[in-house]
Image (tube, rainbow, N blue to C red; front, side):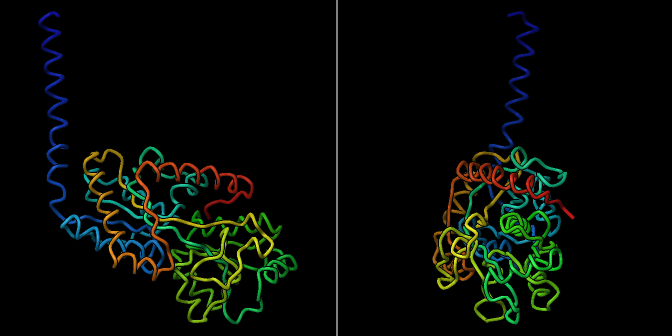
Length: 326
């Protein structure tokens, strides 16, 4: 090999080694300061509550505070964008539901690629979704709601936690399967949507159960059906959508931890281990159960596969219904 070529090869090796060294040293020392967990919805919703359920256990495992920050907007895309634009050093992670990863990117232009820019850490929970109306609503069953919607097309409204969330697409799926036209009204989270449901400004919602379980238990809202293949262990007396006559209206959801592209593998491994340890703690199990959710840990690879499967499923609904970001 000519001396000039050899020198270039040696210099290239030194540059690459030097570039890799900080990541290796960082991964070994990680974490040395608090970690931000970005929640892409308003406080009080399912993502927020589940994030707060796992953060203490992760803090204990990592021996650094895991601090919740709420960045609501654009169906969760604002918060996910905050995560992917952060330094890939493990000090900014996020917890998200499926919307911003499997729905929003097919409905509007987003500043990230959900498969390229987002690194899955772990799915942490599965949740049932439910169709609800206010307690004083005239609709006692899902059949009642569908009949009313057919009698007055475009007059009844359903609220969601935001355009592009699964709580939005679940309503569009019901429209598609039942042949009705409920009008979508997006909110910045499940809590403000629930407030308007109680105030009579919208007629129904199809939210994740954790965000409205307290309202159901208190009798403030009525659950017409769970959008699951089987009845919820938390609502054993509420029929499934299949039992109510709409077997294809399935919108069970999940929540998982994500990180930005470029995160060192050793840091990713440590975050996964922290999530696994946190979910296994009695406190986290208790808090997750209190949110009417079920612990459901997957590896980063398993979570990535789930995201890809969900993208294909909800893309079909988006294309069929023409659902868009308002």
